Amino acid sequence: MDCYDADELRRRFPIACAVLVCGLALGAASVAGMQTRAPVLPIAWADLAPLYESLQTRGITAAAFPGYVQRRRETNARRVREGDLDHLVFYFLQSTAFTPLPPLEPALSAKRLVDSLEPGDRAAFLKTAMAPPSAVTPEVRARITAFLRSLTAPRPDARLTYFRELVTVTFPRPASREAALLGEYLRVMRFVYEKEFAAPQSPGGAAALAALYQGRGLSTDTAVEAGYLVSLGLGVLKGLDPDRRIRRVLIVGPGLDLAPRTGLVDERPAASYQPWAVMDALLALDLSREEDLEVVGADINPRVVEHLRRARTDPPTLRMMSEIRESDRVTFTPEYREYFAGLGRAIGTVETPSPVGTSTQTAASRTIRIRPSAAAALHAARLDIVTERLGGPPFDLVIATNILPYFDDASLMLAIANIAAMLGPGGVFLHNEPRPLLGDVTTALGLPFEQSRYVTIATVRGAQAPLYDSVFLHRRTRGQ
Image (cartoon, rainbow, N blue to C red; front, side, top):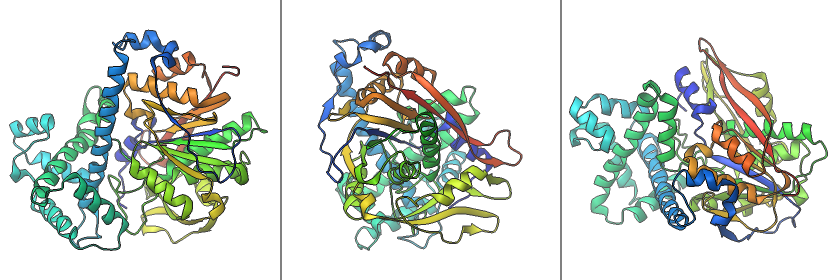
């Protein structure tokens, strides 16, 4: 895994730059082991009564609402497709599964591309993602060629199989695939350049970065650090209500570690970490009992849902690796070390391998063999949280870490309304989204703010601030 410099780490982990998408919810008693088949209910204008004034100021009225929802569904479907293709680009740039060619770091590839352009071509590229063919380096073209050749030579590699199927379905004409992948490469490099180099230097850096995420493809990224944030949040909940019992769990956007933007490790199987990290924290904190726990992973991407459904009947062996690498400048906090040292013990058998990396760049890593009885608690559902909600019994807790930055203000309001509707009386909403609007929306929906915690993951020598995030808890008013 490539080591981030201090600036990159500060961009990735402060709450203003949250990029990972995932969330959870927990609920009332259910029959252990039963597959969840709750109906998916479309959002209706009547569901949003407390938000009418806010929505109408944004041009969303009762008459306009059906059209808005339809456009949002179509936009979200497009963003799922673009998110898959983003990961495809990150894969063919970095993977060593299909070629011995040296991996290409996406951010460096994006900078090299933009820096090579003449001023006029650069401005056009940053506006349209179009560039002269000569701007694509021979190294990138060679990797695309090698990847396309691998499509005709099936290998027992899960990631390669995934992307082979994606390319075959998305670009069915073999003769057009090279041009299509070059086009996707340029589109993705434009986003990466804007995120890594342009937005942070702009006068309104945070706003520019937020706008990028609200329009980009819906990523399936997931990381161990999100589990730490959730564990601390659940610890706060335990402290507030020691006798609380959580039985039914919903995870909105659990994610899938398929092909991250940087640091792809082919030897590590693709996996969804969030459901297992949350289950582990619930059991370790004695908030839940395995025999009556139900964890529902709800994701807009059908491939993530299918992965979770397979994991329920075929318990995975996870190789969980911290996305942050320690070095002579980056040091984990004792609290994060303690969390990582105990991760997985409540849900399976833990094997801790040797550190990955060099003497100056190491990544915390451990292997967890999920216990079949723990896997039986996991269920999956396909859900667009902006336009839909799950029917059935209410949930006790919803956790959404790094999913909310992908939504503009109107979409955020709809998503929170759906989350609130799925919570039972006294249910808790846990997230890490600092947008002020969210406080107004949750209060209007009977989900007022209750607690927050500042979370430090690692310190960075010479940096102005550590790598940190924050977690916020809201409790649904009883009787609503």
